[in-house]
Amino acid sequence: MAWDFSTEPGFAAELDWARSFLEEEIYPLEVLDLDHASFRRLARPLQERVKERGLWAAHLDPELGGQGFGQLKLGLLHEVLGRSELAPFVFGCQAPDSGNAELIALAGTEEQKRRWLDPLLDGRILSAFAMTEQGTGSDPRQFTTRAERDGDEWVITGRKWMVGNASRGDLHIVLAVTEPDADPHRRMSMLLVPGDAPGIRVRDLGLMNDPGGENPVWAHGEVVYDGVRIPADNLLGARGEAFTLAQRRLGPGRIHHCMRWIGVCRRAFDMLAERAVSISVHGGPLADKQTVQNWVADSAASIESARLLTLHTAWRIDQVGAPAARTEIAMIKYHGAQVLHDVLDRAVQIHGSLGFSTDMPLEQMYRWSRAARIYDGPDEVHRVSVARRLLRDYAPTDVPTEHVPTRRAAALARFADELEHPLMAT
Image (cartoon, rainbow, N blue to C red):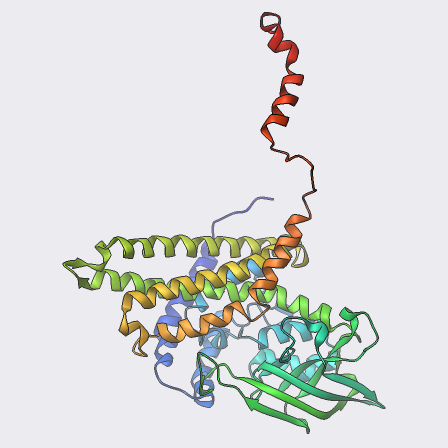
């Protein structure tokens, strides 16, 4: 399968427009200390411009109101949007709403799509994804939140942790154990729960990058579902299908995260390079110091390697589907997270105390980047997954395949006649 590195001119023009749009319209919003309601109000006219441009909800197929770009084009767009944490919301592709929309589109009934998907795609409501639980790490087999059938209703009881949009979501997609005696990967189901359903209690969480929980876009919380009752028809997909659906949601979603990280790295690199040519210390510009030159060179190479690995993974998904690209998806997650941290760390370092202060966006970007090694599965789990898949292609041997004495003996046996009678061989 050939891989073309070029970007078609028409789409390149759209990327240029998106880049200018961020710089002119979205970057100014970053410094206004907006609360969530104010940001949504100011973002609304910008969202309309994105829709008019044909770039709204680009992760979805055209029949759902998206652009049907495919993962490669989507990755290129996310590289631009990653330069500002506000941009995905303005372009209708922010987490967790983007993944939740894909889930409902994939597994929802027509009535579920009408009630939840349509307003979600239009940007009129927000949604939460309630999957993880405190103390279970990355092992969903340990989840304890349950949903039990009671007549025409499901009754949900349990506690979920680090739920995105917990207090802002008009809809919660909840993973709960409905088949306790089934195979570990068939025990859970997904349920559509209105955010204002009786019995839901939310405690907003402060994060390393947002201790006060005041971010205009993101909110995370701990959610208690205390006997929450929902209609039986609010089951999303089939009973016991939650693990499979979650994997289909999380796999391609990592592409979006990783490509947005490239955008963050690009912006941090611009700050690093600008600082290098602007400041002089100890008799000369920072740009002339070998250590700084190493930072610039290593950062540029790391960004390009992560970008190419991510784009290649996106291309693989377009060609053979996400399940066949699981190794590549896992690799970009842990590799991209490390590149993100390293580039930001160098950018902070070159700015010194200025980079440590809130007068530059680097300190907030740096704190948020630490989460990249945790969410969507910790890096350690992805490394184990990649190693196991790669090692399946190898078999144990008593003597190493490349053992020189053994190879020499085999070669001597093969060419014995030619070596013993060189003239006859010619």
